[in-house]
Length: 228
Image (cartoon, rainbow, N blue to C red):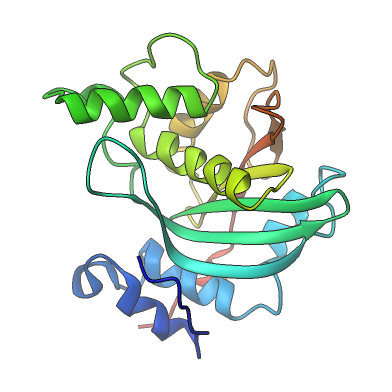
């Protein structure tokens, strides 16, 4: 993957980075909505900042770099984890790796059970790697959404690479009905924090290899939805 990057001139520049620019760039859906929500801010969208500010290590986090469609290589296959947004931030305690998954009404794609139905050696290797990266022992339940596993692993992988002390995975949802929130809550429960997931509330898991992990569902207002 090329390591040379150029700045965007506006939300429309995000389109070319999508896996399928024609299919995925649609008003009212996550890719376009997320681009307009983030490009119209001088820092993080206000709802993102409010959730980050709930933890002392993340409070007043300053975005140093923000990358749309950031690809994180994973073993066991050719396809990387393509994060809707990955951002490197600086907080009072040091660097922060933040992976963002955008949603409007779209689901989190396949469950683990569906994804490994035709388990190949590569899939078995990848799932084992993801479980180890996330500090999860034993088998991951079939009902967990696979996308949440590799998106959270991305935050931790990049935290290690950039020597960040904190890793964050945020679902930036623009669904007024909080569609698919229960899938996120089931995923958070895997980490045994004792805290239930809530909308606009950060949940912190036990540190993994010295990196503090935080998970959050952030509701974005519909005013940020891109116009046709």
